[in-house]
Length: 366
Length: 251
Image 1: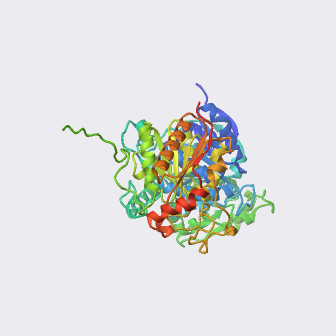
Image 2: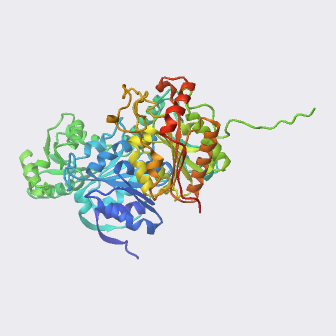
Image 3: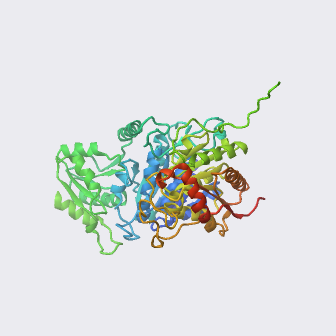
C-alpha cells in the first residue's frame, strides 16, 4: 500500500499546489504581501508543469488577463491582498457580467487603504457583496487550514466552471504564512458541461461561426447572446438562486445543541475551536459553526439555532463584517454578541485574537 | 455581344448584417471593413481572436464573423495578453480600441504590454475626442479644439495631444508602429498594408504591433461628414502624420 504524499508547507504554497492539481496551468498576478509566496510558487512551478506565469503590471491587469484566459476556456488563477483586492473589483464585476470562470485568491491583510501587510479579515463584505460595480455575486470559499487551502482551490475551479462565474477563495495572512502537514491529492468532481462558448479562433472548434463574449448588454441593439438587458438579469438571478440553494457549506464543531454558538471563519475559527474546547473543559455549553462558504452564507442553520434560543457570538478579525450576516440570519430571535479586532493581544498589526480572550468573552455572554 | 460579368467589389465576407450601428460619417465602419478584408485575405478569420474596448468599438465582434469579446475600459491589451498566453501563443490576437480607451484609461496597459513584448496587435481608432459619451476632451484632442470639456478650445494648461506610435517606437518590445488615415483611397490602401504587416509580424512572433487609424466624429465635432473630412486634412493630419515609425522587419 502506498501512502499519500504528505508535505509540510505554508497555506500560500498549498493554494498553488491545489491549483495545479485542479489542472490550472495559467497564473496572472502582481506581488503584494502577505501572498507573495503564491505568486513566487507559480513563477517557479508552472513552467515545469507546462503552464504559463505572467507577472502583470497591476491587479487591475491581473483581473483583465484572467478575463482573457477565462474567455479562451482555460483554468486560470490570480492571487492578491489588500489594496490589490481593491484594484481588482472592477475586473471581477466584468468577469461576473461576461460569465467567465476563474479563481481569485485574497489572502486578507489589514485595511483600509494600504493598512498593514499583516493578517486581518477585513474584506468579508467586499468579497460577499460583489465589491465592484453593479451588484453581482461570487461564491466565496473560506479555508481554515493548509489542507483546506489546497482542497478548496480545487473546489473553486469546479464551481467556477459549473456556474460560469468567478469564485473567490478568501484566506488571510495567517493561513498563508502558517505551515501544516498537507496531503497532496486530486479531488474528483462531477462531470462539467463542455465549454462551447469560448473564443479561441473558430477553426479550433471546427466551426464556421464566431463566438462573442460581452461584459455589457445596454444600447438600442442587443448584443448576443441575450435578447435584452432584462433577459441577462434574469439569467444572473437564476444562477445566483441556484448557487444559494446548492452550494452552502459549513462545519459544526462540538455539537449542534449548545447554549452558545460561536460563528467564525478562517484562521479565527481555528482560535475559536481551541476556545470552545477550553470552555467545554470548564463545563460551559459552547460550540462553533464555521462557514466554509461565506457567500452563499449558511443562514438557515443560524436561523434555526437562534429560533431554538441559542445565543450567538461572532468572532471576526475586523470591526464587524460577517456580523451583519449573522444578525440577518438570527432575525432578532437571539442575542448576537461580537468579539472583533479590538480584542487583539497586541496593539501592533501582529496582534491576534487569542483563545483565552475568546474564552473570557464566552464566559461573559454565557 | 458577349458581356462577361466579373465580381470586382462586395461587402466583406466576414461582415454579419448591420448589428452594431455608428453615426453618419463615422469611420469606424471603415476600420471594420479593413479588419474583415485583411483577415479574409490572409485566411486568418478562424484563427483570430479580437478584443474590443469600451466606447464606439464595444460591439465590434458582435458584428463580424471572428471570435471576440469586449472588456473593461482600457483593459484590452491585458485581456489580449490573457488570451494569447492561455492558448500558448497560437491564435492571432488583436484589439480594437478608441483613443480615450487606449491612450487615457488604457495607456498603462499598452505600455506594459509593449514592455513585455506581447505578441499582440493593438488597433487604436483616433477621433480626437470621446465619441460615445458625447465629445469630451481626449488625450488626442488637438490644441484649440473645442470639446464639451474644453469649451474654450484645448489650451496648453490641459496638456498636449499624445502620439502613441511615435511614443512606442523606441521600445524594444515593439515590432511595428504605424499611423494611417483610411478616409481616402490612398489612405485606405496604406492602412490595409499596415494592418497586414502588423498581423504578419505578430505571426512571426516579433513583438507588439500598434496601428493607429484616424477617424472622423462628425456629430461630436458639430460638422457635416464632408466638413469633418476637410477638418481632418487641415488639422488632424498635420498633428498626426501617416507613416511607419518602426518596423523591425520579419524573420
